[in-house]
Length: 300
Image (tube, rainbow, N blue to C red; front, side, top):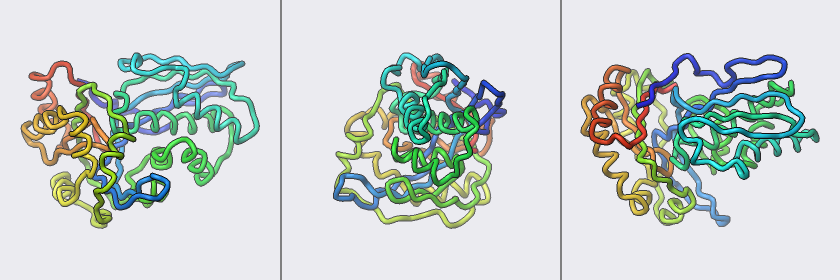
């Protein structure tokens, strides 16, 4: 079971003239409604996105060439050659007409293809880190534009705060105040293709339902979210039925306020009132599922 490093909540942890360390938090879709589908195949979304106090870490330092090293518990799930971090560094450098001379080390703590924005979070952290390393002053709109050219989750990952997301992911509105809450994240290790999940869901749409109220505590937040859903859950279950086992395991744990799948899956989460109840629940789940990835973290 992984526990959050609550001292590493900000994007840029440390910076010197030649080295920048950046945190890439997990992205959590507290709810996800698919409201329509455009003629070009992109889906229009309505989602409340928050971030967890657990994620990947990147260290960027000046170099004579672009390179990437990957370590951490989920390093073997990634290839260096086509990694989104390299794609991001190249795209960012090209937009300013400079050479991507940077050595990057990515510590991969989050599972891959898991519905919690791991790749997008890494890409956003790369953009933030390069701004500091190369001492470039880039406004948020331009940074989001560059990010959107890489992936639809990039703008919200760059924002890094609880956000209502609409459009294809490019329309962002700061969310109402969210209360203190803790989550337990669970993933079996099975990867899901986002495009395949969306493809199955191509004809199921919901109405937008942005969270306007400001819940006073975790229980009130869970009650509000319970009136919403993740429209991709049934599609993900067709591709990976074990997701239902994960949802049931979380729901059966003590003091769980809400259980839901994040994004296109397959990571699921439960909401808890505090760290103690979240850690007890995570331990309960881990007893019977020793091979599952389980993490405990606060909502940031």
